[in-house]
Length: 403
Image 1 (cartoon, rainbow, N blue to C red):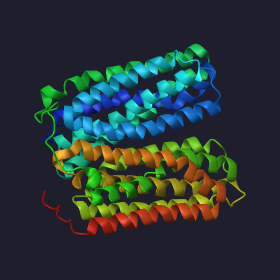
Image 2: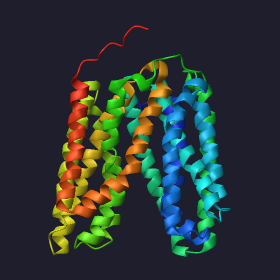
Image 3: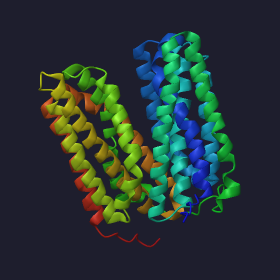
Image 4: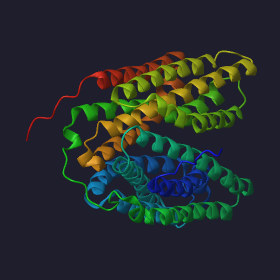
């Protein structure tokens, strides 16, 4: 007897193929951008760092503004505009030779990427309801992770060649992939049935919704764990442990594998606001455990025990990431006013952008800079944010005053 194959919603199908193209481009840029900016564009590492910091700050603003634009013009139009702008900006990197141009192009590229994320989530908020909405987002995140890994593999060819031309080809390929992502996105109105370009009705402002703003701020703290993995962990492994440097790449692969296999399964833990709050808290308990394991890995003199502790840390970190993200997605959707889904998701994505913007300074000044006390402090911040989220989610909703 043949099992019936589940039929995917046409919006999910379109977003899946768009994510494959866009995230493959992202993987290419993750791998080659630093060397491209210094080798091809001739910029100093300090200039690149300052420029990307400025662009990151601008990305917070565009993430928020994109939410308002989604409510006014529809998330599909914003998604198309942002994807086109980002593809053009990546191509423009190849013409960049001075600081001012680099900062300008970087602001467009990073700002457009932030707009994409907001429009993407706003579209999910409109098209799906209930627990299935978080499931769709989980499946798309798996596609995102796998596609980034594929893009990194493509970029390895350019890194192996190491020539100026190879880097230019890699960046232009990423730009083309972003434009390819427009093809499935353009089909959204025909397949949506929810008004892909329909303006949203007037809802209350998220800036006056204290519960939503508090949940967003707490999630911003938890979201620093992403940079702990990509910034803090590599610095800690290479500078403070006896583990070989290649361990960093293996640990990142382990994280990718765990997220790929367990992210969708974790959605079974969440079906309403209270369960989402509990999931976030459980995730932050695991993040605290990960911080303690990272710290412990700095003590053994032998590489074997150090690597074992680092593997334990990344397993705990990955579980914490998977569970806390699942709960955070549900809260961002369920606590929002459906009549202003774009504005609410814009606030949520701006919060994540702020958390990721400050994370490198926080992580390097605590965990990497202070050692064991810093790791305990950072883990405590995660746990406090999780406890606050659980308390906020358990509290009954307070009706908005009549207007």
